[in-house]
Length: 300
Image 1 (cartoon, rainbow, N blue to C red):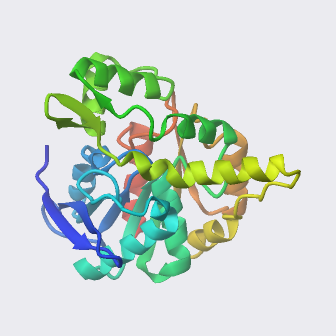
Image 2 (cartoon, helix red, strand yellow):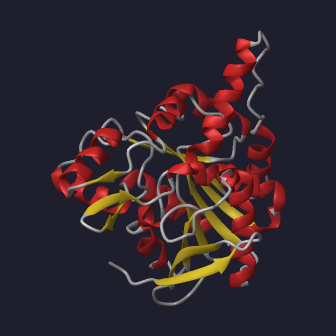
């Protein structure tokens, strides 16, 4: 595994946050790449992708979003939303002196990148959206909400691996025992004699609060609020910069119809589909990596 340096920075509200910093391999060329993971994941998701990008001569920062990995947990759980996370990325840019970067956002990481477009558009030189977009299938959203913040601690490694497989088997039907062991090592930390998921269970607080508010509104005979329209942010992200959408062929979060609408809204956006994979590709699959390599060749 390619070596990295652990770096820490302080968010606007004083929280201590972490990222893995991979130095460029060989001659440095091009802007840095910032990788942002999904809702219940962490920087380890990029432990295979980051070295491949570093080998292109680019510095790579793989972020632990607040409440995940080595980043501190937020004492105010309702802060766990993309607006806060995007502000944290701006703090990272300031702390590292990075003015512009290429962004790779998986799932929630892509939403953070879109929000960042409204806060600091000049920082985004190019972007990869990994199985995420301005609209999301309610099927995938319900599945993710169904497990986020629930079971988090297991007494044996076998139980931890079994949990990882149970939650993600539909997305990676071709995985074998060794694949699931590697996958689980990204999700879990050792805690005494047991194993605990590497995220704060309270990241689910905003999801639960929104669901409760919707239920209350419905019970009172009102009409549920529509989710915010993310298409203006998506179009802004797509404007005047290289953009790539990677989609898992069997994804339940970005279905075929959503991908088609995204491509219609951003005709110049590059597109790659990863066969036999659901939500979300690891981005080292041949189809995904070829598209990312092409985007990096076009990006500053």
